[in-house]
Image (cartoon, rainbow, N blue to C red; front, side, top):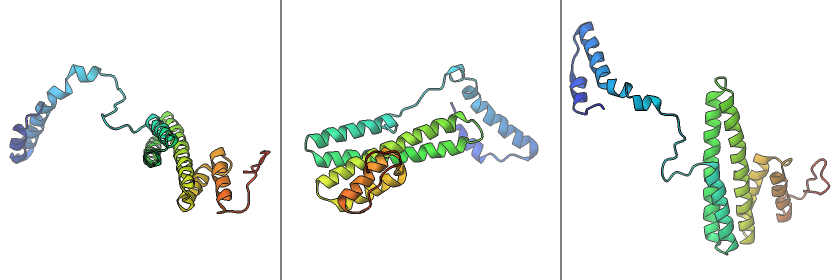
Length: 191
């Protein structure tokens, strides 16, 4: 381990010429040698790290949605809204992280972008589910002005060809925000 007391002496040391620079580099290598040669670190296998208190994963978003459903079912609409909002925020953050990772590995290792794209689609689905649940809650509270933007977002991110997008559009029709019903190609029912 690097001793904090060794760092100031290196920082203020003024190397004179090539020998001084080499001496400073050797001193830094000597300090780092115990870290570099640690057999315990070299033999560890990579593990998934989940820091305490940070449940930023798809399973935790699903759990938030379930807890929100339970709160709404028991009549605690404020708690349901809070949990659905947390699920929306977590889904959005996950979506951004998965997109960033996917882009960073494009052209390097095709497996990683594929995995991140799959996880991103699942995060998008969870985001639309949270939006639909929040919109239903707001409709229940007679607040269509708050539900409409959520429903429009679902149509936008899931498209009307997806079941969630069709449900959201149908609710927009029911609210009177749009008039023209949408009948999906190959669908026997409208919206």
